[in-house]
Length: 279
Image 1 (cartoon, rainbow, N blue to C red):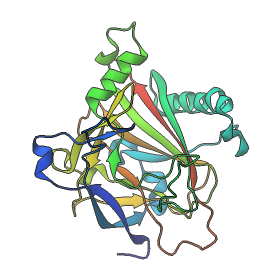
Image 2: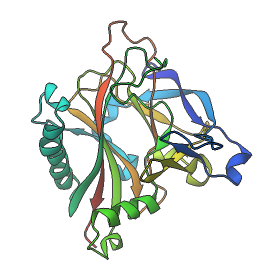
Image 3: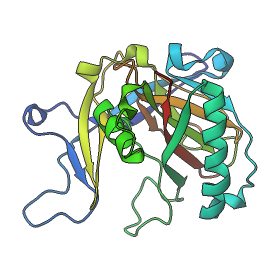
Image 4: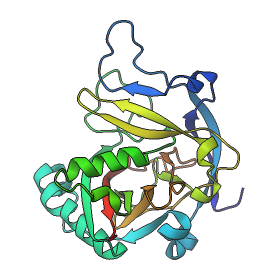
């Protein structure tokens, strides 16, 4: 471990023979009688996370599966509590800015999430949180079949929409910086063996299902983050690429060792988008 790395921990999917015949799942509603709400068994492990800041400008989707986008929004901090402004201004900024940045034909945003860490997290308060909390389980947001299904859902009249190359990306940025509390760790896609390290999983909501991928622990996985991330520094990282099936970036939030005692609880917004390229 170097002076630019930290020793911390996160949670992985536990390797279990159960998943040889039963797909991991988690119900996002009260389970019916006789059915467990989830069959996901977690494995807490130490990880080393390297600080990528000295190499910030060298990152790319093609080589690293991610990059830092120096991105200024027209919204103020308080504006992010206004759902209409987020939708009409921020999401529009992200979609158009990303389209130009990546040279894509179009970008369609299908989800966004605001997270504000409660002072007690990760200890449960026993009450629902007002905002989504950091996710401390290593995962990938989507799979290629789910990405294709979402593209068809967003473009019901375009029968050929899945003929082109489609990428699903996550755009993640702090609402306030610098981040000194529960930053985001990304996994180098070059260190991931898709058939060994990743497991498809169903997140079941009352009216739809998201297929994501859970991550098994492996000593080969290489984790990194950017220290002191500012509010105008947005991670853009790959979740699926129909032109490159093994190219994906697992991610997780992690507790930062030796964080300042007066560090503000992390607040962030993430946007999930489909990026289409000309055939």
